Image (tube, rainbow, N blue to C red):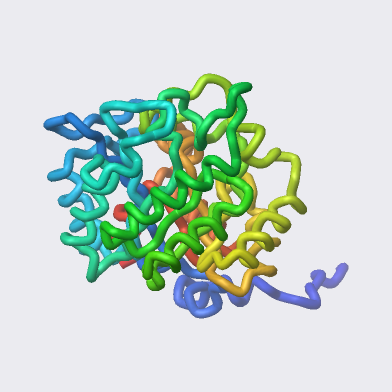
Length: 327
């Protein structure tokens, strides 16, 4: 009789029971690792559902406050706020209006949960311009990088005045971190942190977000957001942002760019964030609604994969729900 083959190594020993698997697990997600993106819309009396993002809404000020308390109670680490104004113009005037929807929303969050959560502000013009681009347009219809930096500085001061803890620079303009850091330091806002969206790609996965902010964009943002084919360029962008004074750096999207995230995490001496974006959210919700995947397992697994790749902070629309599961 032929002897039964015996493997030289038996890795399955460390998978034998739930207790053993818990003991030797390499990565974990904690509620405080999570940041919940939120949308607040001007001129509505009730929350407005976002059709392409089941379970996500455009908030009123009152529902925004409730959502913030729910996140805090669940142990979520932070909130990232986006504003949806009623009126837009070529320069995004509402972005720097102290009483505009975004700045008013930030003040409300700081007042409600500012001691329990990190309040983050989206610093970009795309929600506020009537052309939908992230910056000012020049005479030929292109985005004026250096003119936009001035508007970003003005936005930074307006947002810092609300008490926001972190400013999320998502516009992908060259030099934006240095410009904002200089403005903050010059005005005495030395405690306001800067989160640089360093490797932000021109991706198809932003589609539902455009509905969420009622984007006016026609065309794309390929002249300033990154080419999905480029990984080394992501490292270059992160290196530049670090040199300019970023307190945190980000890779966006997350799930399709885990290689870039891992590279940036190995390089970065500061915390690294990754954004599980609207299209990534929508795909899982749609597949789960059709019974094709286990919704909870897919959510937990995808966020864990982002943490495994090196993210210290994960922005996800499931932040509150996931935090409750994790507790």
